[in-house]
Length: 119
Image (cartoon, rainbow, N blue to C red; front, side, top):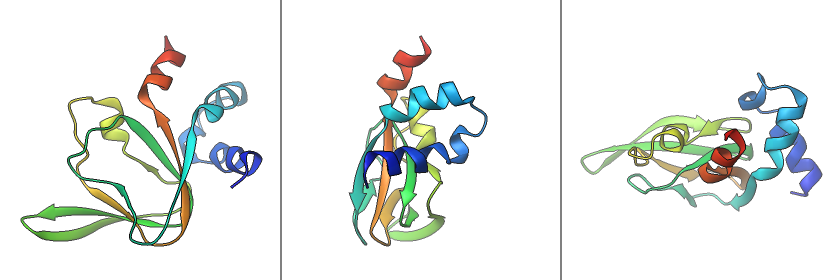
């Protein structure tokens, strides 16, 4: 996904619906993207990490575990935000696996980048 397409997709995310254009234009370039394929792990339960994610293209599932059984608790598609709890709470490890179910692209904003912006 080229940068103009990426920026356009991210600007349409509900995550930014309450922001004015200037604020959106300041934060969007600070995200970075990655691609995933079906069955690729995007996030692992229990892993540390302080990134806020937005699905730009493709689909994924969120799976929680009880004992050894995995349960799908959410389906993610373009525009959906993920990992928001661990982003804002450093003591909160990732609570579920996120696994790609198609080819796709997601964007991540590192917490330290966000923190620099709001200082």
